[in-house]
Length: 182
Image (cartoon, rainbow, N blue to C red; front, side):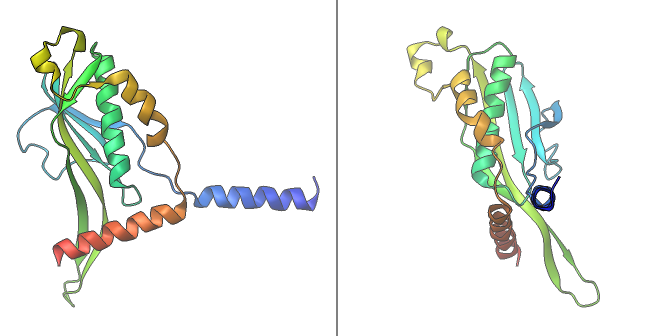
């Protein structure tokens, strides 16, 4: 192997080590729903809270390098995947509650405050439905076809973004955390 190839290989290995690794799309918690039960205790990833056989509260919590848009797409993808896995062809959901989580600290001796971490969160209550069995009155709800949602969002949720974009997302998120706390 000549020197030029070795240098190129080293550069590729270095750059891949610096690539941003987003919060992966995976279920990190699956529990029965208790109102306020997990408030503020969500882990990074997807949390499922079962209300009934066909109703769930889904929450997506991502790292600071991720965007709210990615969190919303991940939530839609997971709702669609759950619908299919539970034998339904469609689902409907309420309005997404979009927010952020922030983690800060204070220096006891100086009183100086700082924001250490944060990221986007999205929560929605979804109901799985069989669209063929819906009456016209019920079809007026915004029913989403699960297979189409999976087709649309699968690649987008797992898309790699640049370190620069992740750093920009982090800067925006931490500034938002700072502005909302102090």
